[in-house]
Length: 363
Length: 162
Image (cartoon, rainbow over all chains, first blue to last red; front, side):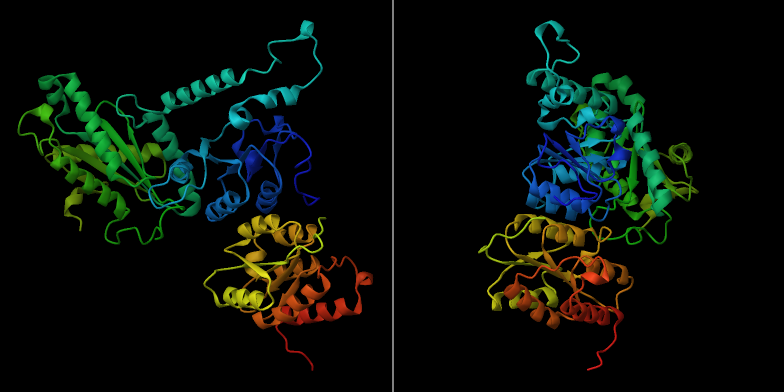
């Protein structure tokens, strides 16, 4: 290992986790970092060098600030270490992290798992064994002075706790009925993505929609059928969106989608993806249209023998920066466009600022 | 610093787009001198390849723009592991002077065109090739001064007086 700004103890001590990138921003308890367990090289290249020359249980890559280099860094790490590669993603980076850890066919898996920051060091559990607790606090102990606080948890217990933490995290961010993200997650994600868009001149579009006549279906066919309709709509919407767009259920039969420009996405800059005619990203409109078409083809047997095309939605699209710069402003405006769409006869999606302008009319 | 094991096969790490003329020329050159060539797309892969080649005599060639990424840290890592670097300077590229200076300070050779790599490769193969970092003028041998002059000429984009 090179001396100087590189990690000091690589290879010599019990180092288990290598942190690459701006870990100080992503970890909430960085000051408590035990340098014998966690190493944080000053430069990404030092990190790759350390990963290649020494044994680590995990290499954690902080995604923040690595937009363009991330793929190259992960490829280099994959080539140089057998350690588990963990991504530390901010909320708006989660779709990218998901794609890198669970790629679609034809893409290579560049990372093994991801965590959403800010997180604490306990989340970066090396090997899930909890042994580092012993190493960090290791002092000779007699049975008489053993304390349950200091004693290392068993591997099973640690794994169980980890599993429960993950379960709680999932419950806190997921809508139970549809499996989509919940309101809290969606708006926090939108807040972060808007912050980023303001810095990078990016574009964000929010679609708010609900199911036409949902109350009628609930009243006539019962709540079980209502739930089934919600699940079906959620599945269809998720399928119609790009993998990095975030879909959530924000209320009874009300859903929202946050469309944004993913810097790690496929080729084609934001300008290429926008419709010149409309001030909204063209892909948001395309996705919304695709969803309406898919819904039109869906045959919901629960609604009777001729239920194909019965289910429709109405929605409103608001875009940053034209229609607002905060989540609240965008959602309010998209909501108003949704109401306009309802007044206009339902089964349509209106653009903010262009009343009576159904996206179906946009080519 | 890590030294190369005597007798270990030398390795040429070529950094850049594998389809580029420069990389193909370097791979041909390596074949001509019977040196194993390892092609790396970028500086990140080059660091990994350099670590994997630990114990072998290694020469890295690549464009200054690529090798100088991440605050020119690559040159320090290479120097710390006794790996010789040779950087191709594209005089038309913007903002490469800082990278070239960092490369020279870390003991790397700087060349103006791909054809100039041949004598460096030859010298590296015959002598073992790693040059020490020049911390002050007193450390410079005549040979180093000539090399430095050539590097600076390449850096400044001037012709020689010969």
